[in-house]
Image (cartoon, rainbow, N blue to C red):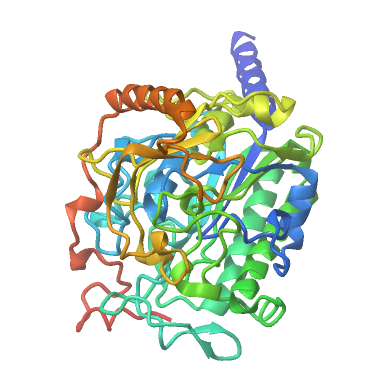
Length: 504
């Protein structure tokens, strides 16, 4: 009888745990690549075809003042997943390459690792770009994700001139990176195809995402799906269903295919019954690559784009969606990708990592349209370092530039400040802009005739000093350099490399 009672107690406890886990919300994080503030129809673009994202914007909360933590992808993705500025985790200078020795340190805690102790199923589909490393130690399956289907870095980091990007046989625009292995498709830590087939890639992603949602729901298990699209990064690509469908050309077709997967994910949520218990958040990793002209995206009315700490490089679209929980509308409250981890942890009832976090719980903004806990945004350049430190700070509606510099990634625009020829400049006093009145950063208020703004600059300077006193730079992971033998190859002993790394 005693053994039977113990058995019943065990069954009761397991059942309660499952019910408790099932009651927890699920999470879908949608991340576009190089998508600018002005690229979506809901943000003012007249020719973008994005019906699924339009529906999210209509039914959710659209942010006007949302920021990535960096104007390039590896550092911004590290910050999104950890809630910490990339300088703390060492994701600098620049971005990871296929043979990079470093990666997101394994002692950093990702959103997936925050949720795993609560019984969440976790998966990433798409672009990782936080390192591969020796023995593939930095891949997502070692960072809290149960499943990974995707490319471990940017899909231009390999030769692409002979590859098909659009059917029936439209070759990829440009040459991408020559001298590297062909871009692989990986499942968990195994290469399944090398090079990837661009026109068929999105169907693989969409099918996996759908099955992951349905399977998790059948198991009564809460889940976290991180869909990190490649599409709007150069070179754009799309399958048969999207090619030629957008009035915006190849960039628009790629955006349309990304949008279709977003729609498929929402449909899977509805079909699984998880729709009303899932928090969906959409944003972009950084601003548009203006050097690609019409194939590089749009920052709208914002200044410059990718690679710069002007608004166009780091202010990005963002939409929060949860039917019945988040009231539709538009918010001008200040928020950042850094805030996603603490927000998800709060909604799941998960413990926060015992480290210094730079993000804040956005719940007051999301559910009550209340004030934001974020009072300031700090702008680091793509190659952040301790010597120069912060390039700019936004405090309230004011933004002060202590340093400015253009970037090749924002070349070709009429604004010379955006170009690589605009070298590093230190500003003392800093440039000062009112981002509510002047989001294009045209009119410097820190001029001799504007004495009334001296108090604003003093306040920003104090915030800058306090922040930098608490900033401890981690070991530079990108700075560890490159070892070509670490480039993922499906036939590692073959010769000559990298050309021999080919598996259909």
